[in-house]
Length: 440
Image 1 (spheres, one colour):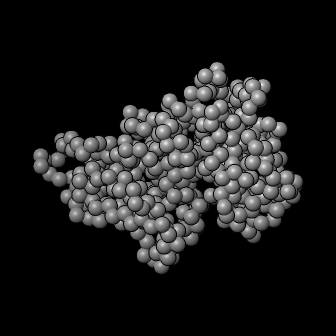
Image 2: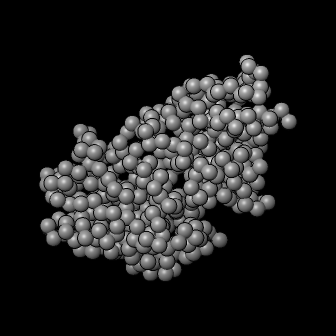
Image 3: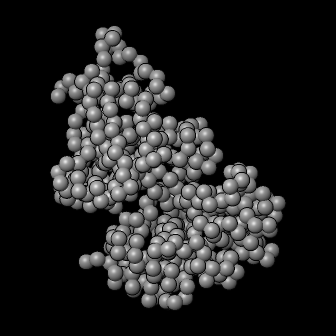
């Protein structure tokens, strides 16, 4: 055990986790030349399970390859499209992988409550971990266990949602300017209306999941009109939907969505337009709408020949109330530890650094939440700008509906927001129905 702690101290002091591109770390001057600081872990295996499959699995494996070669630890990642069901069987059955990659913290919280997850406090060098994330990431990784609050994981790949897309060529030609404040956004909306067009393109139809895009808007407005504490209470069911705070957020959305002419197609168009088709009207000649709020995945629905930075671009959805800073709605992967061995600790410490996603960042499809990640790593213009938005955030919070009980987050919240926007229910009726659906 003493040998292990000496090895971990050497590992941290020489910053080997920041070594990149397969470069070997500097020799430790306190040890004889040729002595292998990884001798105790070479040939060991660390098992992982998560949702990465196909191309994502390849990118993940490439991102940890240099670390594996340096340490001799074999990280065996098993991805599954039925991850949530399979991981529950393994954990509940007493046979968990060493590390589990959760695509959202909600399921992780369930295992933490049951005492299955190890507390990273006292296991990792938490001073280094905490120095490499803004406080919000640490807050979202802090969860309640049977023994009190624990640090349940470290964040890996993430993405941002607080983005407003636009047709750059037409936008610039029209003389419009990118807004940096909510007041400037309102001025832009009025300017577009005065020119005879609808400012916004919105669609929330998504089959059985119709309404999820509306919940994203409510979450964005919650972050911009009330405190992080209230957002967290709301997600946990402690703050009712029928509360002044949530009503204020929905009103901020409704002031855009339900005002005549503000959204192309009006409320009827919003609830009947497939979310992926919604931004297409921005690329018509002339555009029928000018702005579309969505995460960075939406570019896959843009015209095939559209070039980022030339044909389209995006800006950060401004703060409504500057008292709440620059919040960003995010999604991402959080890695939790289920078995404690020296090699597992090393891998977890590695995941708390930007180097753990550097190669993935380079090829595209991943954003790093780590402070030591460099913008120069990004070869993809969109990814780089999203990374800037996240780096400049004063706070981040995970998609709220993904954290709520399924009956609410993927049920009544979607359904009742759709009913409210369509006009088939009043706001009072919709909010009551959501609150009534919350599990005991």
